[in-house]
Image 1 (cartoon, rainbow, N blue to C red):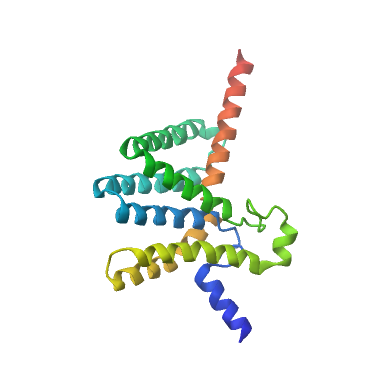
Image 2: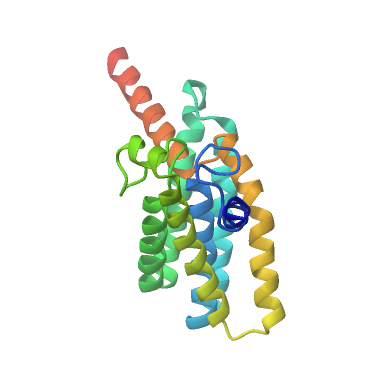
Length: 209
């Protein structure tokens, strides 16, 4: 019975190392985007909420695209384009509503910092031995981000069936997001890889001189 309850818990909030055992970072990032959009649609001006929704969709889609491009040495152009695109998105968000841009950025950074990677490490757990010896600790982090999402969802001034549909949709999307992470669709990897490619390209230009 205890094992069954643990599996149910794991099935709802997500497995310790993600459903594909590649970590939970992209899932936490995705949940933070959804929480941000729910908050701004609820508390912010609808015109701003529409802009932020469009920006969030573009942001997510570009990460998926650049993740699949793998941003290797032959993808220097894509690396620069990656940063240019997200810089433009950030500027547009700040110009649309400065404080909501700051709030949503902070929520996303907090969520991603909590996300255990494929070894069970996050910003707060720096030793993989701790996570491997205490796998339920990772489920607690998964539960925290899931509860935060559910609380915001139920606070929305919408019909109950819509709230439940949003939760059901997220549960269905979770394995897909984890599958994409298994294909290296991870915001931190895309960012870090593009930085490495840009640095290498700058070094090569200097050497030519």
